[in-house]
Every structure is written in structure tokens, then in C-alpha cells.
Length: 167
Image 1 (cartoon, rainbow, N blue to C red):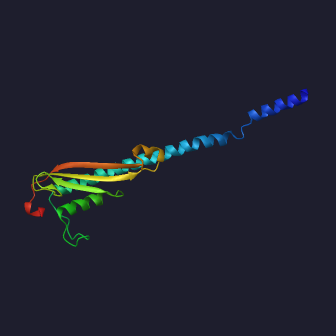
Image 2: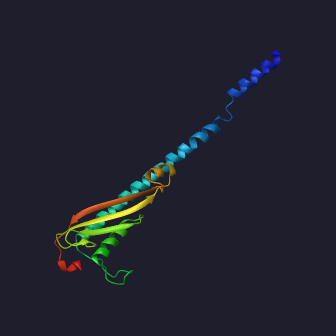
Image 3: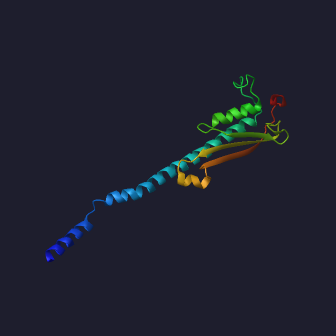
């Protein structure tokens, strides 16, 4: 009888001292946390990239808007020469590399909405876009669809350019 209890005791000691499955359990517990951290960092990087790109596009569009100029050539979508609004829109889209602009709004104090204003008028340019986050656990804090919406806006004072170029 002592022989059986001694072998049972040795078997239980051997079982508890064995670490054959320990690595697998640690891997199973830490892997989801590791991937959540990695994808969270990627999402954060994408958010910063989108914000910085929109701010750059807005700054470039606003700088172009205050000059009163038009882009040379014709607008391929209309076949007509570029208007100031189309020129500003095109500059914003060209400057927003990698980010699609969902909504672009240009308005001025004297001209109202859809007007880039006259000389010495105040012009406001606003850009909006959305970004779908790839991490579900983080994305759920931004609504049920996991989409973060960016809106950037700036106001400039137009230069004293020739009023005939506002057409």
C-alpha cells in the first residue's frame, strides 16, 4: 500500500513540476493583448496621418484662395476653364495625398457660401473626411460603425488682388 501511495505522490509531483503546456497557455493569454496593442498603434498612426494630411491640404487650399488666382487650363470634368472655387478644390485634393476629402466648403463674408470672396474679403475653407478604424475594440468608442470623422477649418484674409480675376 505504501508503494502505491509513494508512486502516486511522485506522479503528482512530476505532473506539477512539469511545464510542458505552460508556454502554450502563456501564448494563448498574451497573443490577443499583443495584437490589440499592435493594431491600436497602427490605428493611432493612421489617425495622426489623416489629421496632419487634412491640415496640410487645408493650409495649401487657403494659401491659394487668398491670391485670387485660377488654375491654368480647363477642368476635365466640365470642359470649361477652372473657376476660383474649382481651383481651390483641386489644390486641396492634390495636397491631400492618400486621404479622400468627403466634403469641402468654401465661403466668404461678402460673397456668402460657395464664394472665395473679393479682395480683402475674409474666406473660410473647411474640409471633412472619415476614417474607418481597423481595431474593433477601439473603433466601438467612435460609434457603432467604428468611423472617426475629421473636420478642419481655417479662415484667411484675401490679398488685394485684381477684382476682375474673381470670375
